[in-house]
Length: 582
Image 1 (cartoon, helix red, strand yellow):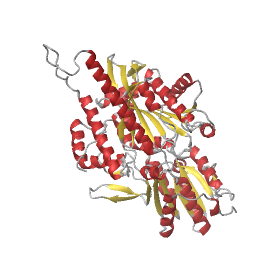
Image 2 (cartoon, helix red, strand yellow):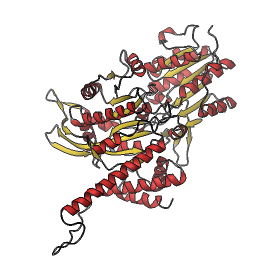
Image 3 (tube, rainbow, N blue to C red):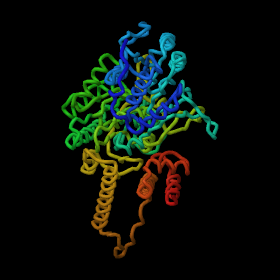
Image 4 (cartoon, helix red, strand yellow):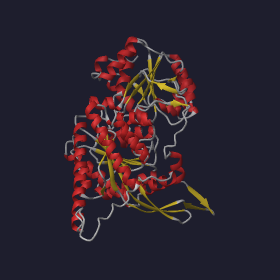
């Protein structure tokens, strides 16, 4: 019979872990949900709780349910380090684990295929079930029903997630929903440790988003040539097409963004993070392989390519995590929970746009190892993505029955935009990329936008790419404010110089009247208003200590409307007036 684990084998608990542990042991419950931001230590908390229950004799066995095959191995290794032996090779046909193990690690898909196998295992021994990233149990009726049938007789259940929200109405098994005053049901967590809390405690890294816009041109299946500037207000279909054009590996946009991202990675490596790694998140396997070739062309070094859960993916992820190679490319993302702490630079080169997916993807870069480490994520300047980046600190719950918001973009639309159609027996592309160039549009940090734009490869862009490798959150904000002030001052000097050169100098010339100022475009007006709003939010932050993101969220609550990246001129003006009264 396998020996019980020793509590002495565990590292000291973080404050949130200790608080949640004490709360659980004082009021033991059949179901408990812990929400903690990626990188906060959900695995350690769950294993410590499992050890406490095993040592106390409350349970005899442990079952961990994880989203992917790779995470099964990762869970088993983490458990073994603290004396809990979990069988990661368990298959449904095995029916029972060897007596050498305290239990097994399985996937949601594995449970969904044979729930009765896991139900019998759970009923045979008093079992503690850990449901990792529990929102996956709502991915399909098969998975949700399977999880419920398999584990409804468990002695205890612990639900873990860093992202408890979903974009659909599929209820998550064993999660408690409470009806609010608006009549909608929202998931309730027993312990919550958000990104803002973890950032304050130094548990996660500050994230700097570098948003790149640029001119895109493409040809439709009808032969029409269209052009759009990425990031400008336009219809959903045009946003999807411009976004896809930018991400096309045959254009210049990806080359320029990858070159900028590698420059940022090199700065980090030279400035205190010698093993810093980068991850490109691609939409599909074809693009992933093409991006890897671009990285080799730009950097002179091969990139590691990970294609979902294909054969050898776990080994490649583990090898990359332990190496000092610069770049990895994954289809859409390396699964949530995959632990590669040295990842600090990301390129969001995927069309996925849901809040759940975005949060999971950014979670790959936030795990802190030492004070001063920051994360830099490069992304297309698409209003919906900019809104998600601005609301990194927002805490969300899974809401049932809520009307679907028209956020300007959705994954289904993007999928349709990327499909091929069969015309006259031949596959004809709906979309042909003609050209795409990149330029730095803005930098987003702590909910605020910085910078006035910079062409790729210019000294202005290098100013942002060259931020020191090790910085505290306060130092990041200070430097970004200074960079923006320097940019504005340089623009003002150029404007004054140009006015003097053409003889106007801002004064009346003999025999002529000064030309009236030209009309200001809606885009220029929005830029000015966003800068003004961000300045007011920053001032309120310094007065109150509240994070920028929370102040923006409060303004949205009061005034309504979408994130500032998508807000209209009227909405921005209303928020400015409201912020002045806070």
